[in-house]
Image (cartoon, one colour):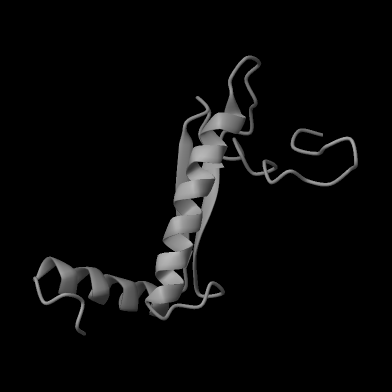
Length: 98
């Protein structure tokens, strides 16, 4: 099984390429996933710092079929509305005050 090491434990890549359902020989999915993992971790820290719980808003590392890193953000609708309000406040120039 792709993404499972010799010890039988997942290395976190099980979902990489899941959208296409196809792993292409010779594509370095690990490098793309590693880049997206660093970005997802940073975004998750920012979400926590902004008062979100990771159970309601979370960034998840993945790759696309070409092996490029992708960060997917999954949020509950209420958290999406709060996150949108935060982005809107920053875009309006008031520093995120909601």
